[in-house]
Image (tube, rainbow, N blue to C red; front, top):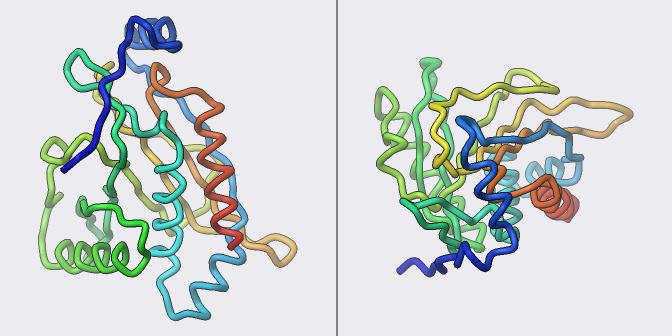
Length: 211
């Protein structure tokens, strides 16, 4: 059973921020940065783990430490979920991709089992698979562009001011001075989160990558 809290907008310290940005046709904002993934990559290879699985797991752990990334607009309410789950694009051998969804777990082995099950499911399906509108609102959209590094990114948008699911995108890591750097783009509804909150996610993500 999902645990959630309805935010009292009238007494919320973000009331004016929420109302201001929610009037915009496209209230999303975000930035692109890099994280040092050297230790995480080495650890994944040492333990025979998929690097993708490792950094996706650490990203989800980091996301779940930032309340503002767990806020969602549902109808006329703002809801804070205790936990958010995993949405990710999965590539297929034929060059297409499908959407996936599985429940978040703090246990890496449980998390990875869910991910591998979704990879198998997507590989044996066609089209988009799960429709975005069929997914629970308390998830995070992840995607990876493994062919290139990048310093900017453009997402498609339907210009819905109540669209409130953050988007996180990873690219191909680059190597400089013997260190590996993973590009990360993160976007969120500005009525729910500010640059401070996105920076908190990046800071925690980097800390976890260093372990």
